[in-house]
Image 1 (cartoon, rainbow, N blue to C red):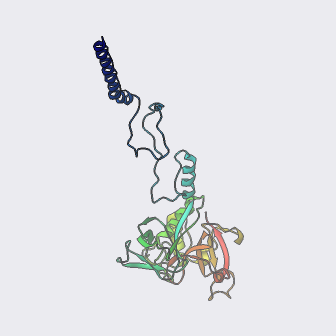
Image 2: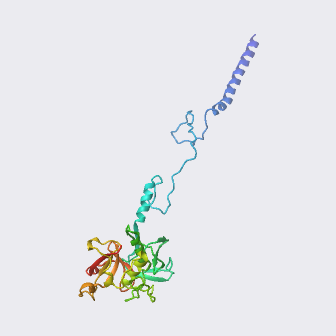
Amino acid sequence: MKKIFVQITATALACLLTLGLAAILFSPIVNKKNTIDLPASGLPEGDATTDTPPIILPDTGPEVLPPIADPEDSEDDAIDSDSPEKEENTDSEKADKATYVRSKVDGLNLRAGPGTQYSSVGHINKGDMVTLISKEGSWYRTLYKNKTAYISAGDSYTEIFSMEKHENEQIEKVIAEGLNLLGFPYVYGAIRLHNGKGIKLSNFNSGEYDCSSLMQYIFYYGADILLNMTTRTQVTQGNHVEKSEIERGDLIFFTNSQRYNKTGVERIGHVALYLGENYILHTASDYAVIEEISARRWSYYIETRRFL
């Protein structure tokens, strides 16, 4: 009996050991179904894993990213794609502005191409302006002597200057004709385009102007208006405008040092097209130019006439 009891006890102990070993061996397999093993360094110190199942969001399709602004655009130039009115206002504001390039120095060259390796086609002085067509690299494209020309866009040499356009498109066409002629030399007594009644003169030179022949030319091609041949006859045309009411497109008549002491229309010695912001387009002693009206020139003021 004693021998049988020992055999039963040994068998029971062997079964318990077998069951314990099986539990140890199979417990990792069960755990792997419910947890994700991480390496010891997988979480920052202090974090703990949980058995909370992950939250799965519904699939809403690909993410729509906002448009990326051109890196050359400034914040002020960026347009909100959800605000079409803002874009329209910007375009309208640009359309209502006449934009020029103003020189900061005397003797600034205009060149045949966008670089100093191109030949000079002329120059402007400090405060003088040319029209802005576009910017190409470090150069502005403009018009000079009825051809494309370029002027430096460097901050040390030029700046952008804008003024309001006139609501009358014919006035802007007259001004545009004048912009084409910037740079052409002043020639005293230059041959006129026509005789004052629209009959063209055969010996007219499109590269030479004095003040009154320049005005006659741009009003003829810009608005089909026939101006007389001299300042002293042009001043009798159009409608009188008070000095306080001068507008873009008006013709301003001045005297000069030679005619200052004369009387009546004989005092008139110069005419210029008013652009606004105290600027005129004219030719006087050197070449056709856009420049600011000096205090001395204002002291010679005589009359303003409006033709459109």
